[in-house]
Length: 385
Image 1 (spheres, rainbow, N blue to C red):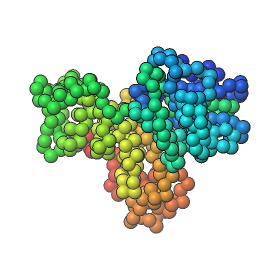
Image 2: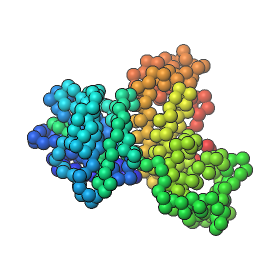
Image 3: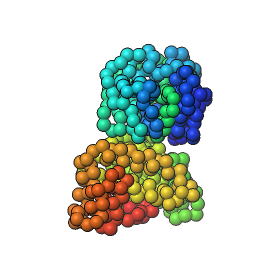
Image 4: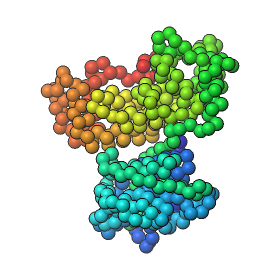
């Protein structure tokens, strides 16, 4: 999915450095907004690049239009009306507003902060700042109205849209695909898993979902002639992978680490982003080492192929690295767990450098270097997983 502000429904006073970065230069006496439609989305994530603070105003949140679907709200009205919710700061104070009323105090945004606004189909809202402070509430959208995520900016504010969140359920029409998934009728290819087991599948479904499968099954490659694809993953992981391909389901109960590898290799960018975000969401001292190494490895691999067709994943792994960095920087236990991943070299210059590091990039770079020295490898595809 392309992640960008929708300029045609955003205020013309704003300056867009690119499709994601928006700034407000000077002051024209109004509060212009940058918007994205919330249709088919459940949240968005923005970072504060520049917020001067004193005598300045910034709002980040969501609203719905009082008009019927197909219309857009006024481009020049400040967030904070009777049909909106979010984080609003003014000068040296910040608050959460809900339908034009202050609900509670909030941390004042500062340069580098990341604001995540989740809003599900049941109207549940979760607002968080840099993975720490959060607030929950409810904002229901009346039937037939249209919802938007967005920001309003005052003088010299700069914000960057990092990512959007997609619903994790599957559409009703997927019941036909699920029936196909659960039946071997008309299946015409086998997916060979680790351990010698195999799953039946349909070439048309695999090729429609993945350009890698399409190339394998349309060319003179062995997979096309033998109608068999070897996947270096366990049968349960491959089964969940097929379920996503057939139904579009985003299931939080998958094994996210091996699934991230599969999604990346077969070029399912949205699913790779989901798997990576799931890893970061469930981050713990016991998993931080493996997660950091996995995301860093794939990020480096994508960067090394920046001029190839795989470069479309670059934004996915840059965003994941940013989210991982924010989580670790806000939790000393995670930083400590990274260091303890190298128990045999705690007193080496490498470990001492990690302990003295001032940022996540420095810490993780040191730890990853140590893990690689202990046997980690950059992996280039399923045959090396």
